[in-house]
Length: 127
Image (cartoon, rainbow, N blue to C red; front, side):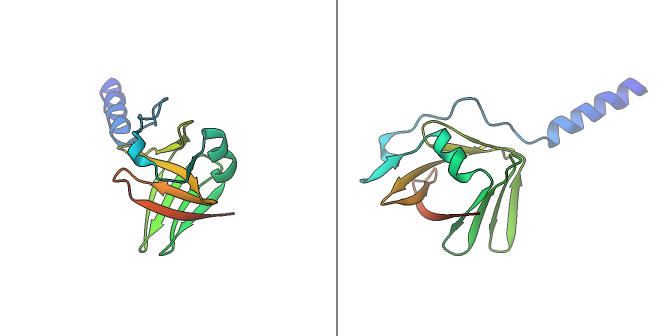
């Protein structure tokens, strides 16, 4: 009986755990970049985003907590993940059940998030 309960607990934990971000980011095509984009790397992202918030028009807010967790608030809803990871190609991963990847660049001195659909969103870094 004890073994069965342990096995069931292990199965439950594996289904409810959030996915980990992979060691390497997906490859990017040049089509994600626009004229004037400056690439950033993992060290730049860590220095400028970890422990801070990024605020987008419409009061959408990303929070990169110092403890490594992440949250996104928009339209009165919040999506949380236990982890985030920055990569040297400027991408970041959010450790949702299905990890999410987006690209950060700087253009004209402004932070720009480029999503999977190549939509571009200017954000302001806040403490």
